[in-house]
Image (cartoon, rainbow, N blue to C red; front, side, top):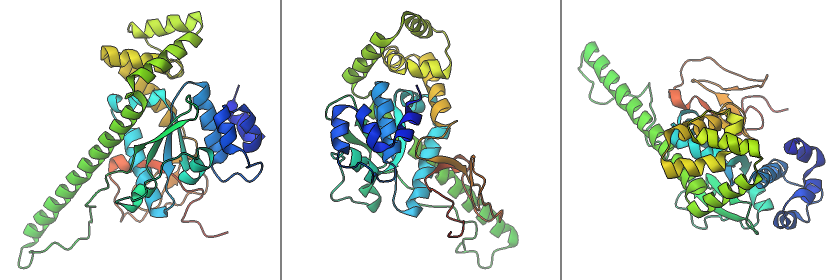
Length: 329
């Protein structure tokens, strides 16, 4: 059954009848005025509950500028993370929603009272454990480490007075190489930071990861158990098969330190969350001026050639409902 399609067709209020008891209570009193994102989130909660998976909420910021930055950071991790970085993601359900929608359905959503940085007021990633009643929600990642230095191709370098054209050229070249290297270090740090947060959120509680694996195993038919045993013995499986067995395979991966299972889980995560849209967001690309949203027809790319976007930052999660470059309707 396509639960997502059913939930969207029914509407948030009607869909509440299919939720666990704690969720139905949380959504009581919103018969027709559900805020934007509530249906997307409710469908994700239902999928996580049905699949015995934790839910990772990638928070959509309120500020427009932060939408660009956070979307870029998520894109760097999802598109350029290693197998070790992405394997745990195969065990989780992922959705992108604003914190307001999350707080609406899960009133216990924690919010930093005295954030040291304004960006921390809307934590980057929440973990929602929908198998517990009431649901347990924690902050998996408070904020991203932002770049301190951005490359500026038009910067005026000091100390070049009286220098020859060749000396000026060498100075600018050295500056460019230094800044590009710092950009790449920042991207590496972002990927590592996100990877550690998600691995800890999804697999850090070893006992609970084992609980999910055992519950998943109990649900499997005989043929599926044979497939799981075949994969754990070194065989292959399609991304869809690996995703359906992910809780079992992930525990085996950790216990055995098995690179084969890590590779299969990472490939399944990429197929689900990098090759396709994550509910609540879109994929977009930018190489300097303007952006191209994948699957959209109203894209605008200025083609000015004056902007600079690091290669690993060019494909990113797009959190706007429409292009900010389009005129107001």
